[in-house]
Length: 477
Ligand SMILES: [Zn+2]
Image (cartoon, rainbow, N blue to C red; front, side):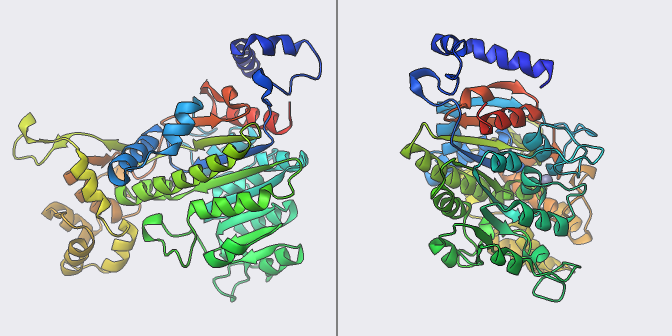
């Protein structure tokens, strides 16, 4: 513990009610707080929006209310009724973090270099949240809409000097034995030549998990009836589909995966469980500047948050529900801008209103899907046809059409995932939903917490503090 951290914890203790202070001098009574509520949770559910900071949660809240007439549980319940903090996001080697370094900070309490997961910059393995939970006798589960060997679940559970080392990451999962492992990423479970397999050692890891007593499921119907007690559920060779493109017969929603994991983990869990639920699509949509895909991704993780809150309600003293993200993606900026450059007067400004959000809600497919339909060698005809059929009400300006067809970026900071950000600018110009980058930004991320231990997450902290608090809660300290 650093001196700064110790001061922080002491300062927070001063804020606690008098009963707690009295309690602190009596040995053995620190496990309970005011009104007898346990201060250390039995169960912890971490809802993790990859690419989500305050800007994204606000976008989710507002669009949920306007477009589906539904409150947004993350802001309206967890942030409002629980405790809110802000976390810095810089990594050991850059002001701008990647997902691996951010997740390492949030899981181990150590800043590391971009690209590294569950290790310090010199490559030393440091204890992850899931290793701590396992050591405390808790059941553990990892869910992601990305590949299960992607950066965030990896850094929350195991160790990789390179986040790309899928084969070793799966081997470490087999050794760690998470009770639930769910998402995409079947490629590193199968040897080359078998399905979409990428393993170079010839091993079939689906068989290896089954031999360790895992139920292995690969479609949503099987997930609905899965009983565990150990479950490996893989629905895709790589990432799962963006929510806006998802076929519910092929892949489950984030909420469905969360419900199944909670059902399995909470059965026979004397010492409780720790469940990590990541929606990666917020990051994927941000990188591509895809507003319509972002709306659906945010609603998907909020539906999962609702499932977590429903479970919490059954025994509120038992379960801590946390919401956070690793960094902001895309520099999302809903703003007013000129409708065009024919006049710079304020009368020619577009102020986003509900009808602009409704235009976004009528978009039928992701930008990634649109680019796939347009084809590798795009023609103006194919581009205009895909826009007309899937982006009703939108008009593609000539400069954007030209840039799209030439594969030219609009700016240096919109040069990844081409030509998707070019098509995205069409949406920006007509809705006011602009983006500053196709990369990550330095916006601090929000942590929301409700349940035992939640007040510890209040205030402005380093992202490493999140891990330090979490480890204490898991270890019952
Ligand atoms: Zn990212």
